[in-house]
Amino acid sequence: MKQLTGLDVSFLVMETPNTYGHVNGLSIYERPSDDFDPFEVVRERLGIMVGHLEPLRRKLVEVPFELDRPYWIEDADFDLDYHVRHIGLAPPGADDQLAEQVARIVGRKMDRSRPLWEAYVIEGLADGRWALLQKTHHATIDGASGVIMLKMFTDDSPDEVYPYEHKPWVGELPPPRAEMLQRAARNLAMNPIRGMRLSLSVIRDVADAAGITSVSGIVSNARKQLGAIARRNDPSHDAEGGGSVNIPLSPAPPTPWNHSVTPHRRFSMRSMQLSNLKRLKEATGGTLNDVVMAVCTGALRQYLIEHDALPDDPLRAMVPVSIRTGQEEDPWTNRVSAIVAELPTDCEDPLERVTRCRDAMHVAKRQFDLVPADALAEAAEYTSPVVAASAIRLVSRLKLADRVNTPVNVVISNVPGPRDPLYFAGAKLDAYIPVSTISDGVGLNITVHSYEDRMDFGLISDRELVPDLWHLVDLHIEEIHRLFEATGAEWAEEPLPTPMRYGGDGVAPVPAAPTPATKTATTKTQPVPKQQAAKKRTAAKKPAKKSSAKKSSAKKSSAKKSSAKQPTSAD
Image (cartoon, rainbow, N blue to C red; front, side):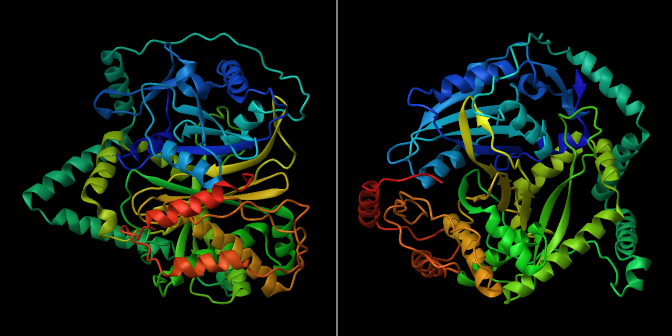
């Protein structure tokens, strides 16, 4: 048995009927031969890896009444066929059809009575490629440990002999309830800080029930002290004329997606060559991350303008950061924190947005340095699971996200991936597209993942709050075009075409890209494609509300029929 850390538990207690704690990755592979069976090889390889990867075979054991953090045990009833699943897309197998399946799969909670992972082999992609969607709970791994798993799961060359073999392991039976209660009592007795927090929580509740207001006064005083600490100056920065560093405690400005979420999700994806983004990095004098943040900022700004919802104040983004040192004894746990960065959505000039994004990230990192990340992770150890879970459930039940603005508007994550190609039993990995998570009050997540020579944008949102998510992901590509025009830089490579879309609810049909033989020559500094510009004008007429207008069924049917005749390739 191994007890979860406080940070691991936080991803469990965050779950409600509408909010999930799992994260996902969508890998798209080539098919090395006509007789290649993706499901067979995936099932075989995962069966081998269960003995080598602890997260694949361990399951949760909850402490009665949530008095203490749960434990991991080896699953004595492990069932590989439950975890590895096989599905297919209906013809023609376009990108939006794949994304719709992904959205439906990630919009379901995981069964906590089993190891917290699932793998879906998805066939039927238009050009013969196949996809693997891996769904893993954040309580068991973070992004960095997920990369370790990806490397162990794949090969460095198409003809490499897989180095792992079946490794025997022994499952464990769940301990008796009496033993779990004894462990919880011992932990509470050995942890005075946790006991003190529980006592204060009880005192506060009793005082509130009795109408004693002095407790509220103490809380207010504590808040003032916190504000004083948050506004403290960094002398070295002041000497340079940089001013003070403020921890963002005030609410972020409202947007259409900053509301309570439903159980349903939308997912969209686009890609751009990494060489083109590096060309923008050189042209702007910033870092690659500065360019990514500016691209996201420009896309969000344009989207909000089109929906007449752009706030006067800049948006705020939560940016996850890894706090791994490489010296961790246990790689299969969470070592992640976050910073809060201002997004200059109030700025019209795309080049100025890059500069302001660079400055905002610098300020955010200095805010992060005010409180050591290890201290934040350690603080989670002293939080009672029952108190934290009750608070989250209360927030969800009362729909407080619809009444109070959250401190951040959106989550933006930029994850560097492998630069060398990876293979799976001879099948080349073409793309790895991140599929993250959302929560009440923050119904939009933008995750960017680089692999080999490309960068993939994966957007996930609440199905009702952002009904035109494909348009929003297109705006990210348009913002890259806009930055090339503003800098006067030349494209390193011709941009990837918009992938074919079958068309459906919230998705405009897009025909298949022309083959190389029929492509027309394009200039280095291309304007925004006419098709995307037309879609943008159409989307501008649709407000991002829960009751979005639907296309007529006749029009949708006609669009699908014309699109279905096109040969295609999924990006």
